[in-house]
Length: 143
Image (tube, rainbow, N blue to C red; front, side, top):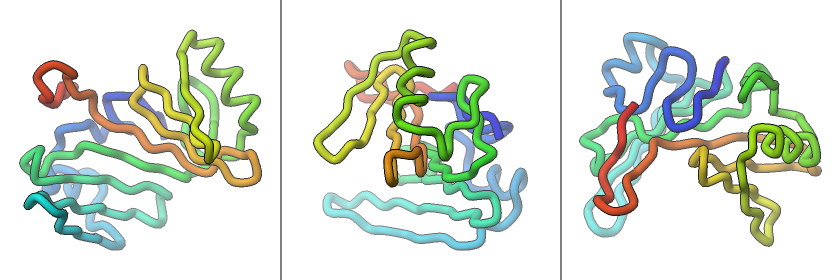
């Protein structure tokens, strides 16, 4: 399971439609829809057996904009990261010359990869990454 920051996961790429995801992975185990203030809506498609979820929203015309995984098979830049220590993950990011920020809760955000990393007991619990958005135009930069 190869994570490609700002691109996707294996053959699933950002910008894919919901029907396109179904063609690749089949029906999700669960879909959770949310309506937000301001009129936007989101859907999270959970594939529990794979340890991954895919997120779509109305702002992208229901295209894939975010992926989250807790699968121990997830590979980031050639390393399995789920279950890694915080220290080992930071070492990987330094080797790749990638900067990151850490908030008061311990969450790591990596702007170069548009990625959040969550920890439990100082071990990587899950990764969440998204499509890049142009800072000036606020438009999605699809892979």
